[in-house]
Length: 191
Image (cartoon, rainbow, N blue to C red):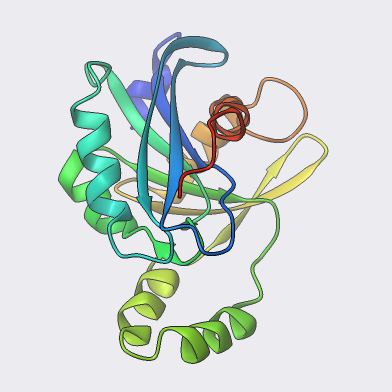
């Protein structure tokens, strides 16, 4: 990823999930393809099962089938879970796409509460979900105005930190994620 960051406008995909109602079966994932720091090259969407296990597969298929795949150097996710507890396998996604995958969050998650929720609601496959949540350790990345927590697969921590910093246009949140969040909120909630 170091070579990609040396380019004037590296191309990345930002992904965020949309809101969903209690009892919804599906939730929207919005994808925004950006040439950093702020040129939008494409927008597309897919859906995933709420609290399901299809996030990694659906994300890979959506990106590869989007028509925006050429030139993409990395994927940035808003956290490691989407649509409730549909956990993204960062390592598996990076391996499938053969691109680095970076998950960003504003603050460290309460892993004790996460593990308790997994025990309570996902007894059958709690172990698999827990392994995915804990697979890539979070590390702090200093940005203007504070810091973010980041997990990475397929690249070094240094390269992931550089990508996160490079993707921030203003404030302290990566622009591809800010835009993906806006798009995801605009798409009607699935049932």
